[in-house]
Image (tube, rainbow, N blue to C red):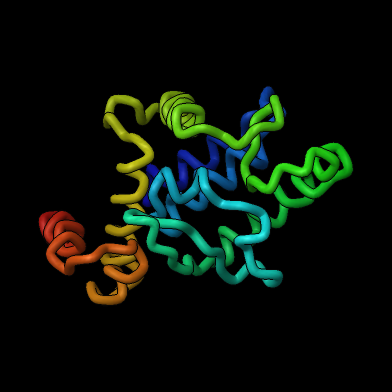
Length: 175
């Protein structure tokens, strides 16, 4: 939990970045929803419900699922959407939620790079974290501290098999 908070605080305090609200939203979504990299990159603005309670993602095997958003995600997305919906970006007609400085949908590589950048800035690069490790972190935290039942966690993560989800319960039981 402390490392997740440190990572978010590192992003938030990046005064040099012109994309801090976007980057913070990305990290917040990974840490709070456990979504996959491909799911995050594929989100379009119209995939988010009007109240910011949930969003639709396309998961493995082109399976669509609903990801529910907590207060931390809603707050981060609200701040980013003010920028994303501004005149500058609206005129682009790009449906992607997360776009680059070149006004294109962020690629998997770009998101991976920004995660590595902030992990290093937070002093966490030695842990060999990645976007997928942020998914593991989210799942483990939901199971450990959120007391989310393993069957519910299976649905949240979009797993086909319960035994895939049980990996997260074994990790948390060791700690």
